[in-house]
Length: 130
Image (cartoon, rainbow, N blue to C red; front, side):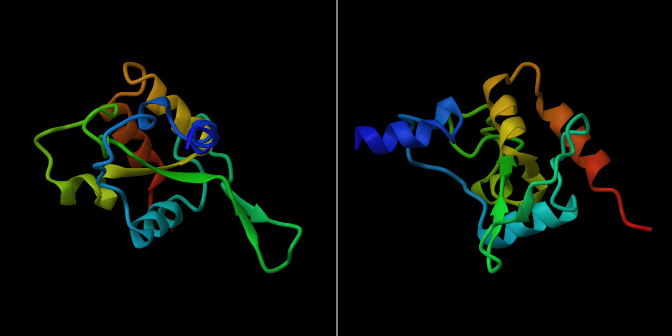
């Protein structure tokens, strides 16, 4: 159990470790919508890294993207909004597609990466294709 937890610590924001297991997670369809709305690129306008690419196995692809919550899925997470319903928390409107580095940053520096800033990033990143 401890080894499993240590392995998870490499990929998950700090607040996910040792937390209450109640989370309002995105389903796979919502994750796909979030990634496709930004062309599989990180939504941070200062990053915009491609989050998907080829693997050596021609039948597979590598994904380094992450469907992050603008307001947290768990109660003790960053930017948690108790006024939101579980359905609102796990909706695409509460999600932002980021590379793993930016996902870690936003969840570990809540003051710098506010709800309003993340909504602004989404607005800039999700512009329609002409």
